[in-house]
Image 1 (cartoon, one colour):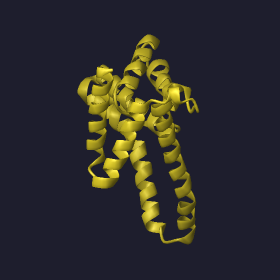
Image 2 (tube, one colour; image 1 turned 180 degrees about the horizontal axis):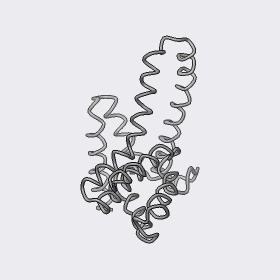
Image 3 (cartoon, rainbow, N blue to C red; image 1 turned 120 degrees about the vertical axis):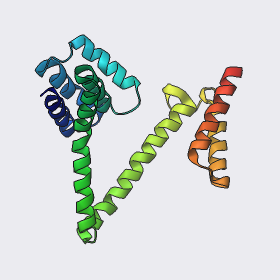
Image 4 (tube, helix red, strand yellow; image 1 turned 90 degrees about the vertical axis):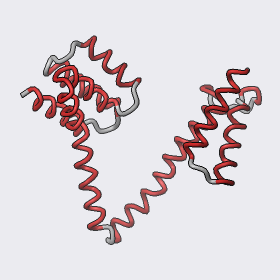
Length: 187
């Protein structure tokens, strides 16, 4: 019975936590603390801290943690499956609709309108990361003293290497991290 409750609770969280991990926190709190009393509010706060620190989405990390706490390994599996299953169903339905109707001009029109917006979102995220790397948390500045020249050098070298020799990007990121770490240790 507890496994069914875990599955259903995290299925609801996965279904209605639209807007990312932070939007899921009140839903998780309602299910885990208020409705089922699986955790105290203090334990829930610790849960969110741990879920933030570990890789992966907050809701999935919380599901795994709560599941293992309540019903061991089977609970962790059931709660995690319950959390990700709504997304799998929705994405599968969208993929089916796309493959069934992708030839329609309306669908192609919608997709062609979405492409520039998606490129803009990705570019915006990249620009934010670049600004943070070069100028720090203060943001863009015309003052040359605020520029992190090590970041600029590593960025330029990484772009050059990626364009010239086309290695796997993971290798370039790993190499940049090692070189940057060594430089910062020496300075």
